[in-house]
Length: 334
Image 1: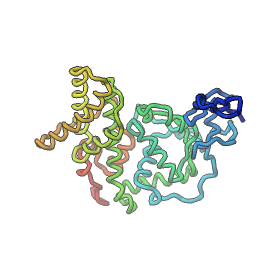
Image 2: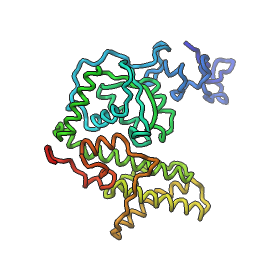
Image 3: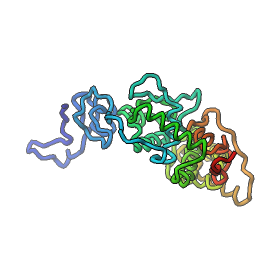
């Protein structure tokens, strides 16, 4: 076990002097990194427990935490939330099933469809799926989530471990697909549908917002303000219409930057207000907001295909229609 140097300078009397009572970065004698939970080197990641971030005595050659016997409990669609079922199908359809090991490499390819929209949506969905005891993640997965930029999280490779045997996993997938095909859902899924639609729509709007900000060389603005504004837009506008409003706000912010010679952070904050003012005026004057097409650099995600093609059977209406106009088809309806 590596030893850590003292975090404080100590006087000859053995007490920390007041003038020297300044906390320094401790370093590990093994790799000279900072001893904080931010350290992502292989040596320390292999010694850190995923569940609470504390150091443990797990051998360094054990590349996966949470390796355990497969669960003996049979998992049915009714044991999952609607989001977990949809994310599982999307994950399977993006998954590389080469080989028969429990350890599989998740591969989301932009050539077909990304797993999810870019941003933090991927991490939360995978972690939520892990709560159903279907899979667990390796330390490398947490390393990827912590270190890669949000824009990279929709098309990446990271190891996952299936907690259930392949035949049980395939059977579960078939049962979920049957629920989607026949529209015979577990009762709790119906109440969970609005939240699922909103979370995906928000992720798509956030993805386009971040794209517009980056294209104009602006820094990120406060996430809380951005979240409030995007949720306000989605109250009565489709994602395609939100694209139009966000684009108008980005143009206004770029013009404001040139016109006033303000800081780029000020312009980034201005963009949030510009979007909100635009939609407020559109509502007051009853504008018909033009819908944008999908940006070719931000393709439709596999989660969107599963939700709107398989479960709701409305294709890309999830992009072009307001959320309150998208409803669940009745069982056995054409």
